[in-house]
Length: 278
Image (cartoon, rainbow, N blue to C red):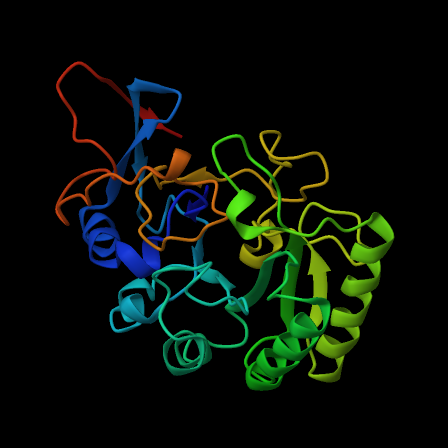
């Protein structure tokens, strides 16, 4: 199986010690977000895991123990956006922390996500062109792949404070084209995440990266090219504080778990039914 760590929270930035403890124990418990009494037991051993896909905005806390994953295949979907603390409240400085950590991963294991894209009075079209160019210059030689998508509206997120300016399909496609040309100048192929933007479609969870053939994940959006995976994160646990994020429902964030806990999120109360996930 492919393990996603995680679309629901930033495990590398916030829970790396917890993650390494779970790998050391060889398993993790996963609570069903829609039925909290259902708990899966997921094996985290090299014979069971085809590979890890890490989703993060800051891999720095994870990298000093990355050698503990030498028995596994893995890669990072690593978000580097141009937004400040007004949008991404708790993300460290991009050029002092986030990008230097990206460069330590290795070009074959690091995919840059310029995601999500939105425009407002501060983050204008020209701003994105300048910011994307600067980041692409810094990442040249450290990755060959990038992914972009425009911001989506979720019922659990209030986007009104961002004062987002709506874009037509033609405008989105044109901005994507301009960013793609800039990326190409730095040896980076830009693809789209679950959107028609005139770019190649990304498979963010990509079985080919691990040499395995997996079916498409039917639980994702129609244009999503991701294959099946098991996500070991938990909603409402991320403390990155990103104003557009769907993972913290209505802005609620739980207290962080103990690093030795078997699962992220609320601890077991004894009424759950635990089932091995194959």
